[in-house]
Image 1 (cartoon, rainbow, N blue to C red):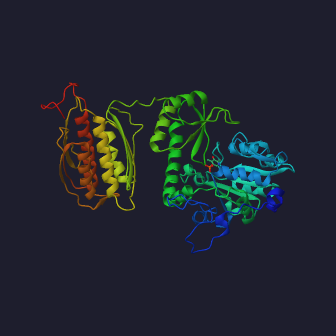
Image 2 (spheres, protein in one colour; image 1 turned 90 degrees about the vertical axis):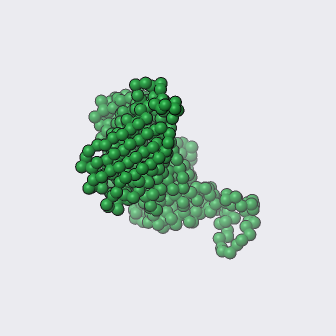
Image 3 (cartoon, rainbow, N blue to C red; image 1 turned 135 degrees about the horizontal axis):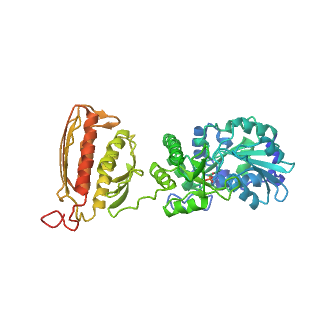
Amino acid sequence: MDPLSLVRPNILALEPYSTARDEFSGGDIDVFVDANESPYENGINRYPDPRQKQLKSVISKIKGVPAERIFLGNGSDEAIDLVYRIFCRPGVDNTVMIAPSYGMYSVAAATNDIKVRFVNLEEDFSLDTEKFLAAADQNTKVGWICSPNNPTGNAFPVSQIEEILRRFNGILVVDEAYIDFSSEESVASLIDKYPQLIVLQTMSKAWGMAGIRLGIAFSTEKVNEIFGRVKYPYNINILAQRTALSKINEQEKKRHVEEILKERERLADGIKDAPCVKKIYPSDANFILVKVDDANAWYDRLVSQGIIVRNRTRVVLCKDCLRITVGTPEENNKTIAVLNGKPLPEASERHAKIHRQTRETDITVEIDLDRRQAETDSVSTGLCFLDHMLMQIPHHGGIALNVKAIGDLEVDEHHTMEDVAIVLGEAIDKALGSKLGIGRYGFVLPMDDCDAMVLMDFGGRIDFRWDVEFTRDRVGDVPTEMFEHFFQSLASAMKVNMHIKAVGTNDHHKAESIFKAFARALRMAVSRSQFPYELPSSKGLL
Ligand SMILES: *Cc1c(COP(=O)(O)O)cnc(C)c1O
């Protein structure tokens, strides 16, 4: 089918507005007096590239789709609206879409005065091909399939979408906003075979750029050319283009998708036995749809604990369903705890959260010296061995700890380890507050196959002694030389006098016993003594 035969006649006849920058794109110009811009450079005084050449070439490489087939919009929402404006005559044509699905298809239809024909999914959220096809008539110009579907989470088999493409007499838009999380392939490669296919993707989900509003539509060159005619000339502003170019990072996106997929499973696993959970629907997206006994009540309960989910109970086929986005491990732990009926532990007085961002690292540490609940502890620094070591602190220190660090590990481990130590130390110091009534001293010497000693004194004099030798260069992904620096940075940020000594044969065990001993000594030193209004110092001040 020729998709151009479906375009509204007024759009086919349209002469697009031609921008100053469209009319001249040659080289070697250094005086720009064609667009009535301000000549004073401030980084944003010029109009953006109306065709987004540079950005499209980057996206083209990533997606394996030629730039001539790529439309970039102010979110997918712009592409959704343009599809109606290009193909559907207001008050005359109609559109067919699955239900439940993404709300913008029907909102944009209504604003364009296009009648909607909903095709309900089956109980298991599968799609009956015959029902979808039967819903169309000669005025149906556009059909919508969201795969993986929002809010149900399931993807439809490519073979089924292809069958609909073979038999549907209109434009078929397949919205792949969640394709990066799916086990199904993208259908973008079918555009050659079925020129009436338009595929939507977005930078808002897996790519982590919802804030800059950047949606993508893939279509044939001819259809794409019409998108270009109808859109606002400068639809992607200069900040969005620039930010996308600097933030697109395939490695990071891949890592995040892997983490989300792991967490999706862990989240589902963590709530599947909760008494309120009736059903967890399988997901190909970065969220799960969960049927509970009373969605409104659980929605309120979650809100009261500081967690907001999407209540879908009023959506067709989704009675008592909550849509829960997969978050960080720490966030998921909280959701798991609340749905299992456990109130989140309230932060104690000796609680601190510190966020510190530098050019090299972005670190958040949350610590609670008096909280003993293990469910919500999490440590993620990008260094597996360091994570393993830091988890000894909540385990053996009996304190609640969350560490999230993103550092320039591609450069070296140094910045990340040093800054984690500094922020952790500052958080401990802040949580301690006035130090009123603490034990002040900590000393341990546990016997493993290694012999580690950690002595600490919160007396106010910062000092550090290190008496440890490693034989290997690295343990796991951490260079052993960094441990001394780590504890030294920690000691000075904690404002503590610390002496660490360890002997033993295995470097892994040696490091581990130091962290364990540190955790035990910390527990002892920060614990409240039986005389809570006294300072354990003869000077009366710490
Ligand atoms: C989130 C989402 C989008 C993305 O919309 P943007 O406007 O690009 O942020 C598109 N389709 C569906 C189904 C979504 O859930």
